[in-house]
Amino acid sequence: MRELLCSCDLFTKASSMSGQVLICDDHPYITKMVELSLLKDGLQPETCSSGEAAWRSIELNSPQLLICDCEMPGMNGLELCRRIRSDERFENLPIILLTAKAFQLSSTVLKQELNIIAIIKKPFSPRELRQKVVSILNKVQVQASPEDLAS
Image 1 (tube, one colour):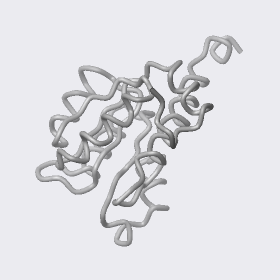
Image 2: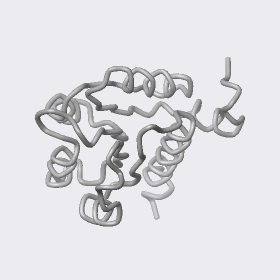
Image 3: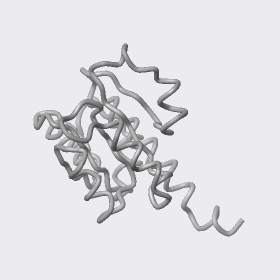
Image 4: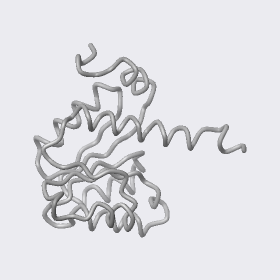
């Protein structure tokens, strides 16, 4: 059953996707909320609670999108993003950064240096995050379509 807040267009676009999304946050309630939200759109979310676990998952599964918390123990989100960008296999992986410290981060610098697609301030709306995820995955699918590769 569709969520009342989800527009029909958003649901239709997302339900035709099978995008694998990696969610990395050290707060289990955030990863669970995002996971359940993305499952409603027929996506394939995977969750982990540390930058190290996220890196292992990225190497094994090559997700289509990463949603990553900025502040985590061990390898934090920014370190994970730097590692991703330094590896040519994943240098184009779309990244959404979640942060409770948006006022302390220069979004312009982060977007330029680490090619982060979006920085979303906590607390956030799961609906808005889902819309952003669907939009990014639609762009990724269009870029990887055979018509684009043939031209």
